[in-house]
Image (cartoon, rainbow, N blue to C red):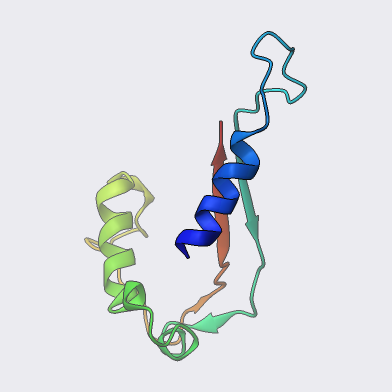
Length: 102
């Protein structure tokens, strides 16, 4: 591995860079998200779909807590004091890749 690094350093170290030359690559400040909608599933089947991903442990309860703390109380269903999801409620998971380029 050391030989590979030495070869790499020798190759790129020999290339002279003109610091006064204009940069031919424009600066890009962007936030890019790429995703793919999956088939709808229920809260009960979501853990099977996301097996091995601890982020989805108790997802139904954690989502309800997050929404309840984030949304105003007027967004809750009429007469409800707290938000609860049932196991057969459907969700549409969208796995995505998010990149911030600068």
